[in-house]
Length: 306
Length: 306
Image (tube, rainbow over all chains, first blue to last red; front, side, top):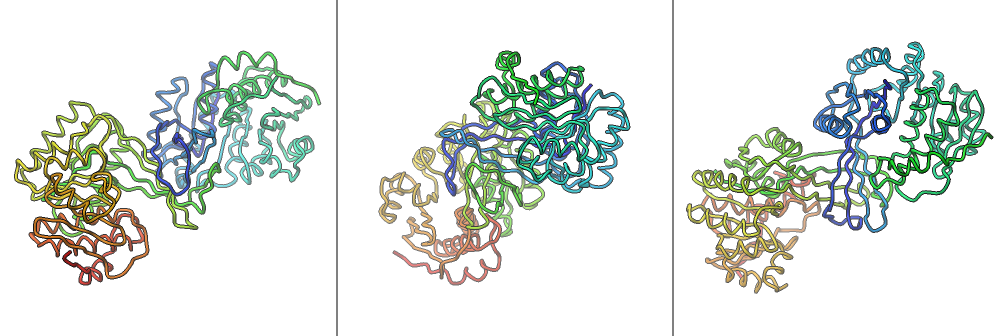
């Protein structure tokens, strides 16, 4: 199976309002809830691609129970191995303005994780690795989890011989990279923060020198730029797709990871990642991918050595 | 005991953000949750005044469970007689802009109530009335509850000999008034919608002709205007109070109802209602009243016959 780690899971709530007016009262026309946090999004896409997936991380309180219930109901292919915590899993509230399509986002702070909870998680993570073909470490850290957490999780995966992909930002990324993950997938802002360079090509190469075996930078509508031991590639969709970019990066991670688990070469992995990203942008539901767009785009992704 | 009815209870969530920026992403610095819906606010204030209170209405789903848990923990004096429903109790999200103090509000739709659930509620309401000295019917109707619901609840209370106060708006108020409640407490907008007049004095008298035995209009910082069988009064705080008006109307209802239950005359009831309103505006927590302001203001409310 493929293991995904989401230390800071979330209950993602989406409100649709006719128009957002600051300091006014709004009747919400439509409420949607789904399990959130990057790693759970990755797990959902992997399951939709037919992979066996196990999701771990933390879930606690009433919202944690909601996340688990919605995961069970909505993604039956994902095995729930989330660890309990005494704190309450955060909510995110996305207010979608129906007139413009723009989203205003409110992110609650994550639950405080205690030292014993973190130790219990680590023990569970080690046993899950025994059955894993690859592992993705995704998203922010809740309070209480040490800032070097991802470095530890990367080293543990490498010691177990499991390929590890890291998708995070800031100091957790900086420390995690130094532990030599197989792949990192920063977006342009995360890559610039890590390397100090806004020029993607030198920045991806710099990130490799910092410890990442391969660096796949997601550049929005421009697709992916990958610097790997086998070479450097750019991969872009055949045409610009209109839609909601929420979750496109998580779908790219799922594409890279599934390709890695299946032993595909880099150009094939990148083509799959770009097609899944494009199909996520084109989906009417934020964070889901549209299977028809995926089938249509996957054969025509432009991958060029650079 | 005093009975309060909240058909459309809510889990009130408050987010504090440094500054609300439409179409941006916000880290929420502080999250607060409390049981909401006007009738639950009234119940909480009545309990704080030392009255025995029972709260009924509907609660369902995960948020309904949260409302009941928070009510039990935060207001031990309130007896929970909420009826279950299969739908999920709504959330309200208030985003408070720390810079300006302004609030942007998002209200989810209430849970759909089925005909059998409404029938079971009515049976429970009738038995609760047997032990009640007064009843308050407060707030909006969830979907599925007939628009004439309050008219039925008013008639049932009158048949049981229990004084009944109605605090709602729109068509539910229009129908409820025709069933001859003892008191209605519209705000200026609700009163204008009911009567077609924006002039409070003729409007309160018109509302009496429509069936309300007494009409107490809440006029914000100007206090209360009461048209009753015993006479007409204006009651105003001794000075303008700065603060958050959320819940001030609910505190006024609690003041009127407690005064009625204790057999106070109209000027004393109005003085108490105005003092509780003012103490709610002055409270640092939205919807709570500040006991020191209440004690300070209650002796100096200006009540004048008009």
